[in-house]
Length: 140
Image 1 (cartoon, rainbow, N blue to C red):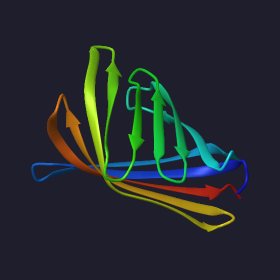
Image 2 (image 1 turned 90 degrees about the vertical axis):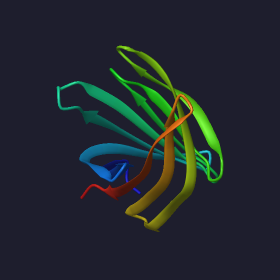
Image 3 (image 1 turned 120 degrees about the vertical axis):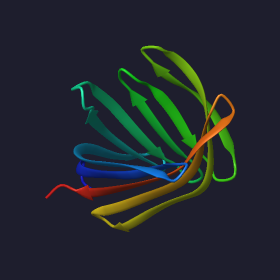
């Protein structure tokens, strides 16, 4: 995989019959170090603020770190609930992430895919079932 990549992020949060699709395509940077895949990319929110995101894929878990106006460090491990704080300008909320599926595939030397299904809770109360799919492609 090349250092310069394109990152495609799509996800759905399902809350009581409502689906909120999220779609993002952006340039990013890829590294492989100590048997871990690292993907770095920036996300620009609707209000123009920038968040810096890091995805770290190891053999048994995925870390998704977001730093910006809102910050979080989500850890995805199948069959486990991981707790983290979701920090906003208005305060922090305790967030629980229970992962039911997490698959990472190296399609070839120019393409990878990550798919995660998880339940999201805030302060111990189930909020939504979520799916996130991330495709990483070498920049042409």
